[in-house]
Length: 92
Image (cartoon, rainbow, N blue to C red):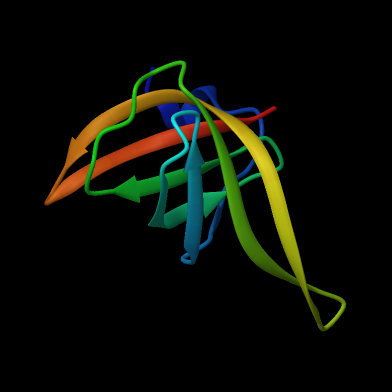
């Protein structure tokens, strides 16, 4: 069974810049691939560690207005991608 079939929540394409704050205090700009109510697929040039806790900041447009989202997440999986790493984060 692949990861897509195990998902509980439908993912939507979500191509945005995301500000990532890591526990060690480092901040970086990464890209999102998709989003659901429970998590987000992300892409970065540096690998993350499974179980790592992160803080993500990004903008959503809700009812025609921009809204900044600041949410914590846990890295659930990491895989090598072309020129970087794809990883999934579960919101906590």
